[in-house]
Image (tube, rainbow over all chains, first blue to last red; front, side):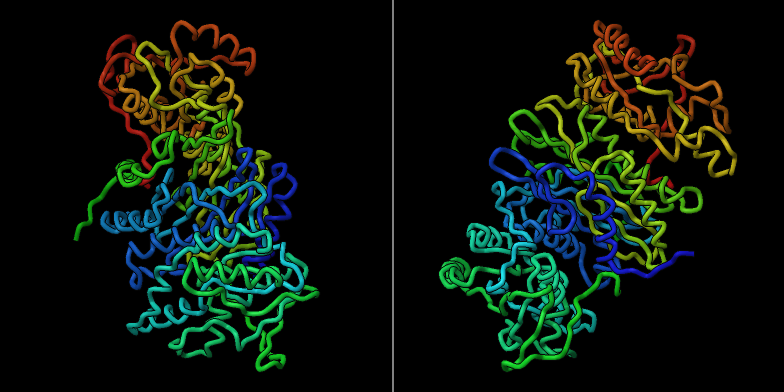
Length: 320
Length: 320
């Protein structure tokens, strides 16, 4: 029996290899935050789809129906933010056990609708056990204006649009029934739609993606796709003062994932001016975490100017 | 505890009521086979999403991975056929247990790609138990050219694009390990994309939808949406000679569902000419099963010219 363990990412590669022959002309398929399909004369269509599975992505005894709907929509919309686009509509499939309360479903749908993006279609079915949610979001963006993972350039400054690791510590507190202000970051992440649109207006913003799996692995994807390497200054990681848990703060910031802010690489010459405008708009600066260099797709870490030996691993959705 | 049992359809009504405020201008949301969104100057965009759940929609010991992928894609594409459109791209979310064989996944994706519609995005995650599939299809159609459920008119001839009940008997044979030519109808339904496109070119084709839940309940939806009633001639139901199982042939044809051919209502004056052209194109005629009349949304059955008392019920995905 050919029963090989394999990671989520190798399966995505496999689908890519199976599917790439038939893609639509001038479109981009699997491999970025969204697929890009030619739309009108002036707009591209963006499409992304995400699954949310009970006991893998959420725990029924730790999150309310409103939380779960809110986060499912936020995570899906975050893919539109990562391209710099505007959301257009959501489509939902939902499988749930027969004994699910109508009140739970009512609150769940309210959560899905939290961002005023219309829910324009769906399919509901029974499941024998567990709640399975799949959301598809359509969005639009100026033709050719999408920010891709593969567009990073050596010399770019690497930055994030928020502090890192809050969701990871919040998840720890949630599991351990510790009341804390970090929990809301885990249960109700905010898709950085405005930040994405702001950054996408500059041609000097090169690569962009959302931080779902943790900076370590997400940046690794940008490096691999852009055929550059990255140097991260651990001293500069944007970490909240109060981020203190069982693990080292760097671990939350680099590995825990689910921050759902944006990771961007911006031309070094243009960075300061973009950052000034960003701060005016959002009342805080972009957080510089390092820079891209010529290289073969690796991520290196520096602490106090010295190379740091630890290799961080991002959250793999198969490691539940 | 507010724990009310409720059917799939009432939940769809509920989502409609929650969601309708935010729909996109000139678009159609939940309630037809696809959502319709303005696309280019000459085209509308069609979107539909479907869930396929182990032990609800398929049995792992009765269907191969290729069968399951094939049928998931067929059912999803059938929604595009029901509007009269052309498929553009598929998007997949897939949740599966860690011990799923790579070979199974390989064959499943091959099944998804059976119809040469590109798979342009997806998300894979673990599940604790059971395989959950969600597919979203995008399609296009001439602007304003979609055939809706609400467009049926009193006087229309009601017809189908294939014989009915084959999938239902096939499912019975499959469960009872009886080798039969009906099983392929259950495992590998063909989306009637060509038939849908053919019928959609005529303004005299009024209402159209795909037959997923059985003629009885699907026609009921057309009647409700179109604010007309229907009379079905049971003598005229298109049923294969060999359709003999545990239930009455009418029951397979009306109730079993999953035929995934099309149900259309066509202007009485134009029907004969359209039917002649249809037969030239597809080597069999449209199957007339009855006609629409003025009324309040009911479906009545006639046998040998006499009203038949039995009320048939379609397959509700919650009645597993």
